Length: 276
Image (cartoon, rainbow, N blue to C red):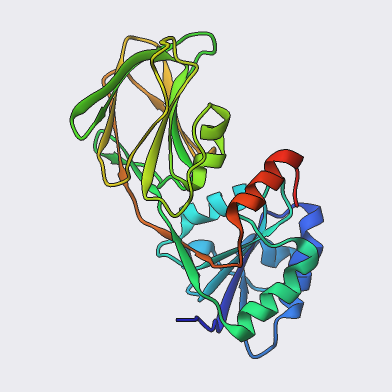
């Protein structure tokens, strides 16, 4: 079933090169539709805006890179379909190029759109809820050159105990981000899984592992080395030795469904190392 949006929110990371794209989008939408820019973007355009948390819209357009989308998702109080306009680097999540932004948005607005669901990870340190992870949750040594000693459990069964620089817990969406750089597999976003990738493990048998996303994963720190939790490269928290981390399936997000040949697009991006 297609969605015909009437209220459209627009978020921009605010770099000077993004403002012309933002302005074109706001001016390119018909007057009978309500367009709500985020507060910071509105100031740059001389308009009234609204905080992302308070937006009640049918579609949210993010102008920037994948980082802009990741930051925006942390503010949403409910799943809102997201469309990314890529003015950043690789653009795995931000799929629309700036030169096509207005025409693509107008087509989506007038023809309607379908959504695709992407899973996130719920991350809890002891009883403290952390932000959801769209790409990954990483536990990493806080002191470069010093390895962490930790154990990983999946549904209360020990998967691995090892020393390493850290470990990445990634979604299939995030399998092409930090997890891939650490030697993890590329996983189709339609697969409901969590990918566990040790970072520079001091153990030849330690390998990336893919488990059901409904599994409960527990990480126990062992030893006295300082550690840090990083979620989507946006949220940081220091960890102490006695704290346990639990990772389970989190709240899903929605993206506008676009025509796609996922693996062809992926290979083009990886070969070029830049936007396509």
